[in-house]
Each structure stands twice: as structure tokens, then as C-alpha cells.
Length: 477
Image (tube, rainbow, N blue to C red; front, side, top):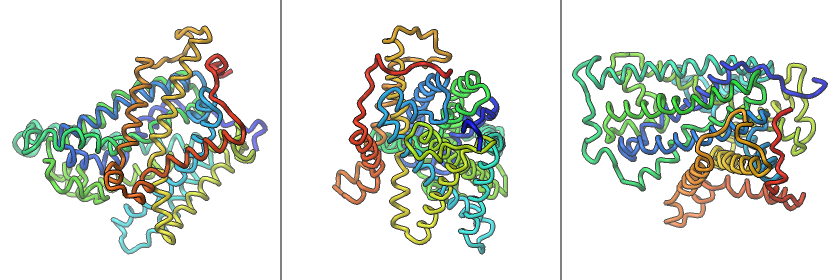
């Protein structure tokens, strides 16, 4: 074990940039983006992604200000404890760790299904175990091994999207494969807006899930070689990433595929053959489009599992460092890897995967519990930044002292907070209309779990919301 039990700053700027770049490109874009167009029309889909993109941009600039001032592995959970209330940091940290560990299990199950597309006769659980061992091995060596793996997995995703955009735009204007398609699908039948404002609010959640994982930038700050340079660079690129990869991709899909196409909804159920990306590539003449996209989506799922194992391991390590978890989870190997925290994360992922085979009902509840984690974490980021900046000014500091400062404060975190609450509240409105208690429980179980952790810690340790004049706004020493 390392003498000082500290993680090591070995993530290069290119690693952090590409982790941030690839972090918001996953199955949400490749598979479920089409269902947004089907439900809300091309105009509604664009509005949903623009609104969620704006929210994520404000959140990431908030996180950038916090992470450059105090770059630590605990990220927003540590900021919640430091700038709001120790009980909130405890609740957010444990919730984030447990739910990312569950997400790893979901990802390895999904990866096995994708491999069975090529090898249908092989049992899926064997592939899941192989992938879990692979993820464990990558994360057990060194943080640079994790960073390098993510770097190349992200490059595959980024290149795929860029090729898709070039081919799609060429087809729209008529340069490739027949006459120009133009924008006629934007005015087809009830387009561009189908179902009005309720439909747009309804698809906010799907759009929001597509951006889950962008908060990993804050976690990587704790092991970045040069967080003052790497984090602002990654954050400043968020706006252009969202514009290029999401808004343009939705525009291309909406222009080439009418919102009435049943394939847009079928793809959301995991049918790779009718993914919007597959359909566009096939239309361009790529006979092997389905196999190509299956490989790309597999890359995205492996990237998600790898990032999930990393994020949850570092969160558990940070909880132990702050005395919110057993001390053993705060110990590191000589390569700076919190091995006990990694082992605990993998074991929870393995146990969750086992329930998918032997206890389907328990598994579904676990998956539901992880559903709101990202949005709850984002609320924590907005609250932490709002409190940090107010405390910083109240204690006589100047904004110019900060290495990076978020734009449009306090409007940015307030808009992000409101949109997060709207998305969480609107997750399953039908369940409330029909007063279906089981559906309400399955959908919103994540909220009472966080409240139990928060109130339980508060009751035991008698913590209070820290007064602004007592908030520790000092930078990393």
C-alpha cells in the first residue's frame, strides 16, 4: 500500500478531454435519440436536446469552477459536504457510488447481448463475466491505463458520429445517393412539433439520460496531471460537443427519417438493425451497417462500464478519506489505485448481475433505483456552486482570484436546478394521474433512498447547513 494513501495525478490533458468528449456519447445517442423524434416530432426533439444541452452546459461550467478550485476525486459529493451540509455530502456520495456500481452490472449485461448479435449460440452470462474481469483488470493497474482505454474507446465513438454527420448532411443536400432529401420531413404531417409542450417535457428525460456521465470531468480532476489546464479545456468544449454531436445528429436523423417511422421506437428497445445510425448508413450503401453499429454501440457500452467502475471506485475512496466510509476503502496500492474500493464496487456489480439471472424483480428495482442518480448528482452540483460562489463573495474574495469562473452566475445554476427538478418530477406523470403506487415507487425510489441517507446522517451527527461565513472556500494547497 502507498504510504500516504493518495491517488496519483497521471491523467494527461488529452485523457481528460477525451473522457469528457466521449462521456456524453453513448447508447442514448446511438439508440434512443430516434424515439425522441417519434414522440415529440423533429422540432420537439431539437427543443428537448437544446434545453437539456443548455442545462448540462451550465452544470459543467459550475463544476469547472469548483473542480479547478479544489480538484479532488470526491468531486460534487465532497463539494456538497464542504459548501452545503456534511449530511448532503454523505448521502450524495453513497448514492452515487452504489448506483454507478449497479450501472456497471447493467452495462455488462447489455454488452453480452450485443456480442450475442454475432454469436447467438453462446451463453450471455459468460460474456458478462469476461467483460467484468476485463473492466476490473483495466482499473486495477493504474489510472493511466484507465485513461488510455477511455481515450481510444472515445475516439471510436467520436469518429463514428463525425462520419455519420458527413454522410447524413451529404444525403440531405443531394451530394450522396440520390436527389436531395431537403427538410420536407420537418413539415411532414403534424411535424415539426408533435404533441406540443407536454410531449417535449415528456422526452426531456430521454434527452437528459443521453448526457449522463458528463459529471465525470469533476471526478477525473482529482487525478489530472494539470487540472488547472485540463478541466477548463474540457469544460469549455462542452458547448461545442453538445452542438456538434447531439443537435446536429438529431437534425440529420429528423431530416432523413420521418417521425412516423416505427423504426425510431423499435431502436429504443435495443434493436441495432433499426438504430437511426444504422438506417442512415444502410441508405448510404453500407451493407455491413448493422454489424458496424453493433461494434460501435458495444464500444460505447464498454466505455460506460469502464467509466462507471472508475467513478464509483473514486467516490468510495473519497468517502473513506472524509470518514464517511470504512478506512480500508481509503487505502491505495503503490500505483495509487484504491484497490479495496475497486473490489467492493466490482462485487456489488457482480451481485447485481446475479439478481438479473436469479431474482428478476429485485434486479428491476435496483435498475429503477439507479435511474435518477445522474439528475440527483446534478442538483448537488448546482447547489454546491451556488453556495460556494455566495460564500466566496461574502468572505471578501474577488471573482478574479478564481482559476476558472462559471458564466451567467447566479442564473446558470438556478436554471440548471429548475430544469433538473422538472425532469425528475415529470418522469412518470401517468403514474400520478392513475395513482399507480407501484409505478410511482419503481420510478421515484431513488429520491427516498437519498433522503433516508441524508436524514439518517443528520439525525446521528446533528449536522446543520453551514453558514456562508463559515464555508471553507480555500483552494487546494
